[in-house]
Amino acid sequence: MPYEWFPPAPDPDPAPTGATRLHLWPYRSLPRRGFVLFIGATCALIALPMLSVLGSPVLWGILPFFAFAIWGMWAALSRSYRDGEILEDLTLTRDSLSLTRHGPRGRRQDWQANPFWVSVHLHPTGGPVPNYLTLRGSGREVELGAFLSEAERIALCDELQARLARLR
Image (cartoon, rainbow, N blue to C red; front, side, top):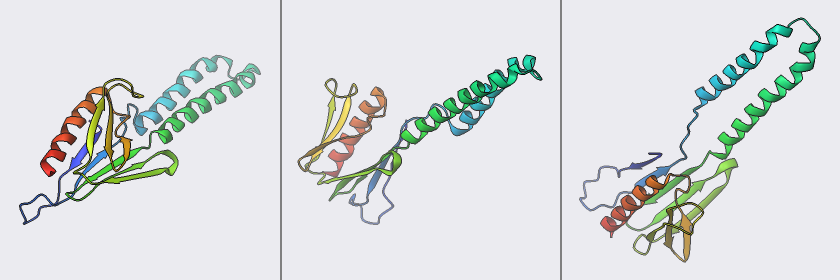
C-alpha cells in the first residue's frame, strides 16, 4: 500500500505518549527507470522504419515529426511525475494531530486539531472519489489520501479509527 505507519520511538514510560506518523504517497505504475526504458524503446521503434529512408531527402521531412513525438511523450510523462509529487504526513500524539500535505510544485497545506475531537469519516458517495476519506475537527474537514484506491482508503479509515480510539 502506498502509505506507511511509523511507530513511536521506544519510551520507558508505558503510556503511549510518543508520536505516531503516517506517510501517504501516490502509487507510481511507471518508475523512473521504466520511464527511461519507455522513451528509449519508443525512439528505437520509431527509428526502425526510418532506416529505409536513410540517406534520402525524405528523412529530413520526417525527422522533425519524429523529434516532436518523442519530445511530446517526454514532456507529458515529466508533467505527470511533477503532478504526482504529493506527500501527506500525519503526526498523531496524545495532545495533537497534525496533517501536512506537500503538493506538486512546492505547495504546502497544514492542518492541526486535538485528537480527542477529531472524527474520521468515510463518504461512500458524494465525494470527488468513491469512499472519500476525511478528517473533521477544529471547525474544518480535510481530505486524506484522495489519491489512494477505494480499498486502500477503507483500510486506512479502519486503521486510523483504531489508532484514534487507542489514543483516547
